Length: 477
Picture (cartoon, rainbow, N blue to C red):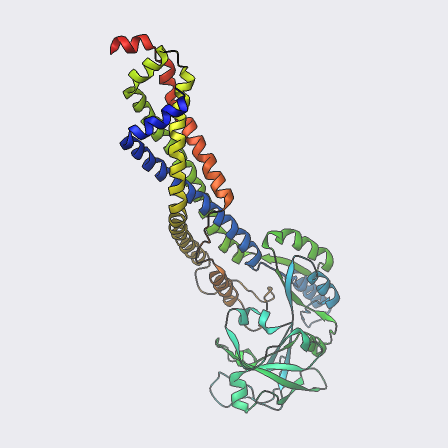
């Protein structure tokens, strides 16, 4: 009788044993498939994070160079002045046209005095009018777009009336002012306000209000210009005109479309800027915060696959060895009748192969459900761990953001807010669930792993079959 036919007859005759093997094999394959689809989902999520994390590269003034120039000028003159270097907008735009850059935000800052309106002051007493201070009581933050600044991205600032500043506002005098400043002076969208330059001559500049924003942050300083309400947003071209640096800017932040290209893009931007007066630095904190949970889930899923596979080989091997002992008389009779031992081993493999097919069907029905539950539980646990470790690393009051450090907007508000906005941005972009699904490649991997498991299990049990001698078996019976 053909050994393939014998394997079919044995499975139908030993229904209880066959059912037990089916349940064990199904459990093994369900967890193997769960590990495979979790791993695939983690890989897909990692690729998504790479594109959506928003890694930034900032070009800003080199503080060491600035202070070095100040000291050298101070030796020749009694007055110590710090001059912020600038770079041509043409270079900045050239770097922004790189294929790995999704968008960029050029920023400039200037200081002016209020003329046709009063500033908002946090000090006790009357509100200040126009001031003769050289620093000015109004901060002009020039940007490519207010939507791209850290304060608007983190929702610290938000438009409540009118519109944002956009790239189309370049070379215009359109501005967005704070709600408290507008309310205290009765200013509405469409009105014109006047400010005066702090330089000699105190030239007046008329600005058109196109939007009003609300700021959540407050100031603890007594200086009028330091209150967030006294910050006016406009295009980056206007502050350059005020400071006499037309066509140039002091800071730019590039947001990458692919965070994996951060190092190569940084090198290209450095070569384009080509100035020792500027430092080019990258911030991939958000990317790393999003990426780490994915890597952990991916590694854990890989361990699940291998641990379950190894456990499956051991369990099935032991079951087959015990089965061989109970079938010694059957094997002895077959060998004495001239049946090859390799055919007997082939019969065992055929029996497990039939059970494997049934177990794969069950695994395909349950694998996605189990994988989805286990994968999302792992993801939630890893993200909680990641946020906790990040909070601990950034713990304590304040944070980075020393004066002159690169930020995406808000000259008077930096430091801790930048760190908080990075963490907040990462939390918002973090995947809440893994998109688990059974793909054709997952089925192929499952089938391959199943074949390897039963093949190795049969090989382990084949040792005892090859050692059997039919004469000894029959005499013992």
